[in-house]
Image (cartoon, rainbow, N blue to C red; front, side, top):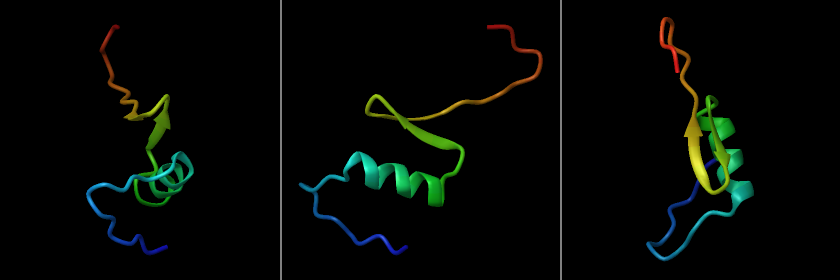
Length: 46
């Protein structure tokens, strides 16, 4: 899907963001208005 250029005052809907992330950044997701990604690191105790 081609994403059109948006003006500075336009925003994407949550559905549009989720679709674009799934298509272009599959390890990222939208959660409570934030675009996030979880990293798994070996040997890191958190």
